[in-house]
Length: 437
Image 1: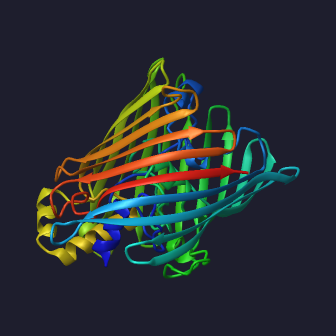
Image 2 (image 1 turned 180 degrees about the vertical axis):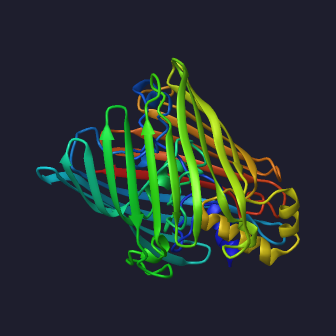
């Protein structure tokens, strides 16, 4: 079961996932300069603008954001006999978000997405509702903010893998796109109480997240607190501008049964068009292959690289990722020799949204207004340095004022018993039509 689920996640182009699943086998989580993290200079932000336009709001400012999406696709898979199988899929999605003030100093935030999918080869239908955010924010003065409710906390500055995104584990109920920004946006938030103090050039944040349920739920409209709020957790973070636009963020995360984890996020402008980024976390934890109850040891996780923006609106990101809790070459070979353990391991990595192996390379390329105005091209890929499997994802998206039309193509490559070569869907082609209203 774990192997099949993880393989579906790896190959997900438009599939609807079961409760609590993740994309960790692909090892993607995309940072987009979240307001809770370190502030990025305007010139940096231009070089890091890699957001998923599938959920972009219309240009007119409004407290409400609404979208309806229809997708149709085709999966190409290899059967056990070696023959090629084709499988058609359909998906509809509806999203609703509100962010507005209702009284002086008070703000309400709500975000929800409903996804329903059908797969032709099996005739299976699945529907899941994701309550992404629902919280109240109080600002008693210009230097303090208090938030309470379900908050989608997205930490980290690296585009492809986020070691300091501590609240990502178990947060994905549905996978409709493997674009890392889409994965970070379209997931469950965690219920928490958060306080922030701000001053010129810096801030400090403290939060606590309580246990609300013991197990995840697969029910369509369940808020699924068991996926995000199983135990007590806390996090402290702070940032201070040191010089120019350099303002690293420092984090401490832990909780009941969770050893303290330390993290740092930093970006710096290398020249007028290049941003360097570094994201690191370290602490005692169980190795993924040993399970959550396995012996603990110190593990480091790292994502570092640079993003270069060119004058023709082309932006290129190159990133190196390291996950010390994931499998090295010897562990991976041992897992591959035992199919049951291999499947369980991929399922654990997917749920935790961690890398399946210890080292990989990630690239992300965007071209805005490619060939014609309003046509955007996106390419991303990951190459596994341990087992040498890889995947690619290409998208062409045209924007009208209130409609987007996209064509997406994903391929998976590698030997059997590898994260991408073992995926049952070798190729995914789909069209996506999104209406904003």
